[in-house]
Length: 480
Image 1 (cartoon, rainbow, N blue to C red):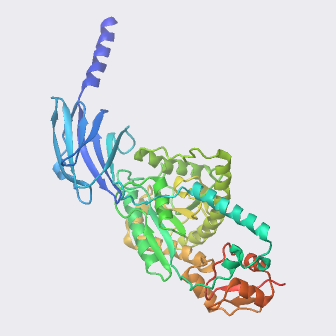
Image 2 (cartoon, rainbow, N blue to C red; image 1 turned 180 degrees about the horizontal axis):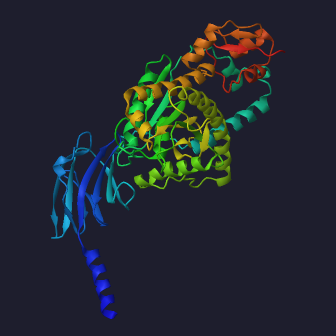
């Protein structure tokens, strides 16, 4: 018995001392970073440090050996100009990256999952060249907006109605500002292709990877959007690389998107389920067990990126932040559900629907409090027939056109005030008896005096949060 125990302990010690083999190396180049992944036969530890003159990054893997071919690794569009390998202290592996730009490295290991074994991930982030320049914390932005509104309300209470204020008050000065030319801006749609890089998403029976088909559909959707007058698409991921879930919404916010749509392909542990689904954010959990399971599986992809995906509230008051987040999400959620219904109706014309209504679940990628958003499961990649259709360029284009048709229907009915669609709507209809179309040289105060109504009532009747008015804009004149 004692001999057997010694044998077991010895076997365990021998296993722990066995060298880990680098079986593969993969590089993903993104606009703001590069990610180098080492596929390992077992767990190992690594030491990563930088050297200067010339700029290099050294990666030392303890008790490891190389079987992968580093020459097969494409370094295009990355910060790495050359890669060299060698042995270190007899039983270690040294990898040296020659760099062509400044990087901020970080590294971590990942345990095996359904797609991969042990991995060492080395991220090279490009300081000052991030795709998200000075990202705005949405909670901070909401707090600042609440403070501005509170100060404005306090000032209005002190001076009374704006038409009774003296000419030196900010209120009178702002309402006497002449109407500005209408910007006729494009409505910006952020199109997010799910997964990417070392995160393939779901894999179909024939080996089709979700990350590939959703990128194809997203690119087709972006092209369809850009071909439509008054619309502009922003591709969140335009290549095969990984982006964190929070970073995707940060990119949309940096581009001042009016709407965010994330494209995915569904999967289940049975080949039978089929059909498209549309999801909006649920503030209080999922509306079905399927939706909750799906949300959990999608959110889990952020673990591949080495982050936990949790909302960092830092030092702000928890209750205040929660209340502000709920208030803002309520407004964006209403828009999301409205647009989701339009998209679902259009998708039903090109594919079977898995759910006949807009589902709601706690997708991390939808948790942007200031941008309405949808997650669209274009079909079940785990269903052999739908896997084939998802690869078909004709079907991909049909799905893209259906999604955009739903988005367009909503924005034609409810265009953002400064958009080209809003200008076209205002100029295509003649004002009724209780409406007035703003002309060049008009001011809010002059319009109010002309129609005998207080400025505040005029602003309230037209949902004007500020004092800026546009030429061609139609105002409803409240009864005095």
